[in-house]
Length: 333
Image 1: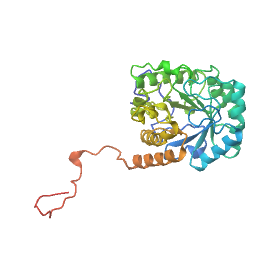
Image 2: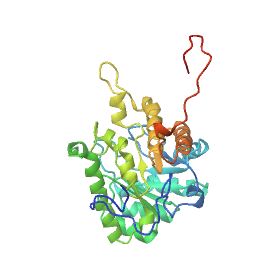
Image 3: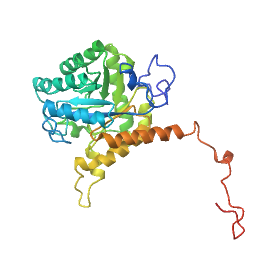
Image 4: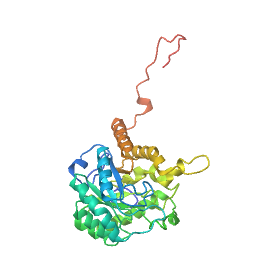
């Protein structure tokens, strides 16, 4: 089902021409080098927070955060996502002034060093300031719901905008894991965000969608979104997948006593999700451990390139090679 042949609740993309094979639609405002590749992109995470669930404040100072970002680039990250407010389950908001102090020096320096930078924020003021300092992408886990001024900032700045599926802030989101068909519900709610963005003047070519793994989805609700990712891709917008080190992977890898695998033990599973998401048409994967996912998306690109344009039919396939001289007189492989 394409963006033009689907549930009317999901908006069609206008003016984009015929669908593009993966990595399918790429946001136009990105640098040319990131629009011309033949594989899913890898976004490296730079947390400038003291309380991240995944790295516990290891990169909290600007110097440490910049150094970490440069390391991720050396490891193959295509762009860097800089965030100054933790969205781990149960976390509380930080004052906007603190978020600005945390992220702006890091964004500015990484841009100066040649990085393509995304700012991970739900606040319009932070988004605007980061774009003014060179950020190319605004990654908003609330899809604009947390700040009614966000859509206007995106429209006026022209930045790429990642609109994630979201139902509430981190301190309440686990209570909002109520779905009928989670894939249909997420698509419908993202469609509403696209409509709001368009109404504010945001262009389709700026928009990226994110199914919001782990947000109002603490456990099993994540798996259908991954298994049916091609349905979201088929809606016509680039798709970002952020599974890295999340709780549902910890549940999957739990030990015999039911203890969740710790975040750093989830990187192998994250890379597996990156490969599968890339093979399913994701535009980008957002990860903490870059090397594993860089390899994963390359595997997926080779996999996709080797697939036939249409499935071969068994009745038209060439017969498998056989050994006519088998000792027992029967044809054998």
